[in-house]
Length: 433
Length: 143
View (cartoon, rainbow over the protein chains, first blue to last red):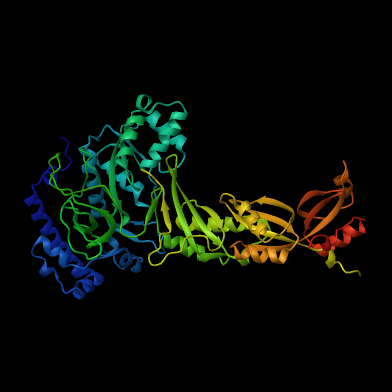
């Protein structure tokens, strides 16, 4: 068995919980003393660091939501001195202001440490060449894997996104052994390679996929292995938590949420009450060592469950099952988070359109497509096709600017899209994973 | 100046989204209103279409279609009489070279044929077509 950090990874459950409690006490104390925001939040909830005596006492701390993070843009939640900050990343900001995440040197170390453990567990190491085909830049997906790859002593190919032919050339010519990407992109890359007459199994050394950023399935994992010889390892993360942070171990059966990095809870999304292993609910994360941008009982919005039985790999760190959905109506398209409310706001900028819309998500080949159907107002209709086409183009451009993905727009007749009483179901997700 | 309004013909322009048998739905409404179709064309936009129809009772047709949920607009077009023989269209075009046509469509109406055009500036269009000696059909022929 390959282990990166035996001291932490191989702790017993009891040892781990002792460590977690110690870290939780330190972290709540730091937040209480250094963050006016968290201090006030804890006071309002009637809790102070002194109340954290057992691990279960985490439940006395107040929940945090994405809204809290967004409302405090850009840096009111930052807890470190400027001098200690070494980097910023930002969420895509698709629902208005982005969330700016600051990192200290220790934060960056812990981030790559977390990925390094899992990467080591399935055998990646110094002799490997990892092509990082996630976006580099403000988005944390690229640099997250970049530094983890360097940490384990492997060679990194910082390919970032785009130019699939060049990506394939690099894989072939450099002998790339692992690739970080979205699962759909890897699938797509495989098809392009096949069209070029390249047999990924025979003609390349690619055997590991570090895959995340969008929902996918075991069926897709099997297909990747059958068609490309690539074993896909599921990754979970979020820019708020640092970036791509947790990966499956060699067992490929649930993602280990390293107990020294994060305290995992699953709660009933409606009541906030804790749920036990095997019970499906919303994931809540408290980051135990984050310095610059702390995360306290953060409601991820992701639905999953803690896995009951111990992992055959022997690590006692808790595991989560595949993400089974969202609490809100967020959808992930080509690795980008999209909220229907953003589509709505964008459409509202066009007086030619009505207020109803429909969002149809599909998968053509292996790439996601998004179609927005919007009602044309009767007053805006014109016999002039050129003008109507131009309107459609304007709507599509605005959506693309807001969402960062290309969107196909279909103008439809007024009063034809479904109306809803109560919670609207404006999203039709036809994808099969 | 003579009154040119009698040459203006009310065409129905109907927004047609990308769903099967939209034309059929339009035709059904017109049938049920006992409205006769004199000419029509379908224009293709990006993911939608515009159905353009000439009918004998445009106001009634517009009301019925609107009631049925369609988005309908009147567009003024001109109808030019053509000879129903080889070269009929050519003769016409020779005499309307300075007219900017946005779109057009034709149909046969024995013993003659008709070219329907939408022009940029209808008033100017009428005058220059008449000046070119073309035979514009009066809208009483339609409505």
